[in-house]
Image 1 (cartoon, rainbow, N blue to C red):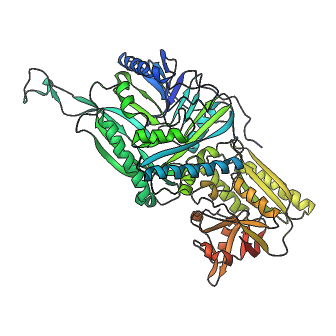
Image 2 (image 1 turned 180 degrees about the horizontal axis):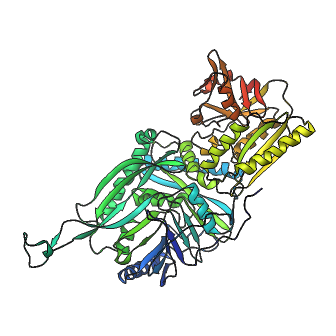
Image 3 (image 1 turned 30 degrees about the vertical axis):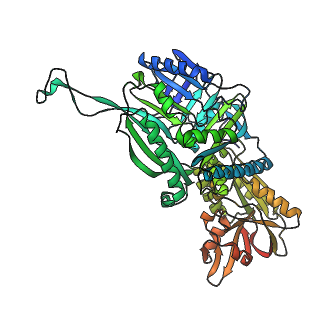
Length: 603
């Protein structure tokens, strides 16, 4: 069912740029001229023309690519693309978004292969650090998607999932860029400091003999250090590895800014502070300096680009290592932004959390900073964490509730709907509760009329208020105890999808199928800390004298509806359960089957 029919979504005009700002979205459209550099030889001329446009009193808005995306798309993209505009207009988004389809093309097997390649690359980088070639490299990889429809509609949806402070959308005939960046590459702001005396005057004369002395302040917000959204911020603040990553890039940015700033003006305004984003926490510092005059695009590009937080340190050595390991990046890890006339103000993001679309092909990049004490498995988990919001924008993504219908009623219905509501809020999905309840009531009445056997009722909630409810006979109970197989794949306790029952469970389904082909009933998972988490179909319980013991939510376990109901009747202790206690697991539980005995656990 759907609360609304799909409609045609509006597109932004060609050669337009939309920039998010504290005052609201700014739309730059109908450029007076377009400045493009297709290769490195054209970059100096393009920068000179950008300087000229700014000096002519025009706004400039566009992007600098990391490279031309030669092996990502059929057509290379520009290294520099900017529109030059007389003005900008405020923009208001439509209230809905359903004009796109995004589908990943990477199979689970390909993802596992990519994971292995990622782990090996991290080890290669660590060897380079050991040899003294560099001390940090930002390693990234790309994921491909099939796309159709309105890129701008998808951008609107992504803004709901990841409200990047420096988000931007670029629409050109070569590429569409959907950037949800939380990181500021650099900004320029004019500040009035001490008053300056007019020529021929002396101190002590009337104030009218003095004029403001505006100076241009350059700021950068290097971002290094990541943790899951649900972690205590103090964890990230105190994490030595994250702080080391951040400090290295702060030093690099101080050096880069020093190339264009007045001597002695570079300083660190904030160091290693933690900010909360939609799905992650990030550690951010602020470096500032007073610009020499005149300083324009040419000087800034040559001094700062590419951003240090997405390359490493020392920058040139890190760039060489990146080139040896990675595919093209395209506009990802470049910069998107705008400048005001005469460059009195400017703002450019670091183009992370950025999806690039050309025709029906979409590419998303993500990565992390590798230092000496990096652990490959944890870096892979961070890579997954940074692209989590994009997974929720895919067309097939949906939330799931699996309920037991018996004797014309669903005993745990309120618990299922409460969990669904919490998850819908996290993933910005509409919840047409009245329509859902009406549909469920139909199934309840049919069950009473037919005196049906217990049924499994599956509720799936999609984007744009669309939902489906299906009922089928409940699976036959297992007379004996469950035989569990320990999975060889550990789950990431920070993965936001582990806290919500959704379609993002490819690994669970695969491991469950493999276990059942070997004669087992279910598969048991541990996390990266070698703690027990859950099985593919339910929560796990250990029976103790003081009640049931079960893993806490921050282990990566799903907040089970049956378990929540059990906790209201019995004493349930939530604590980390180490691998050494795995054999003590006596029960698996879920809302469909209730409490099930465990017969054996095999490794």
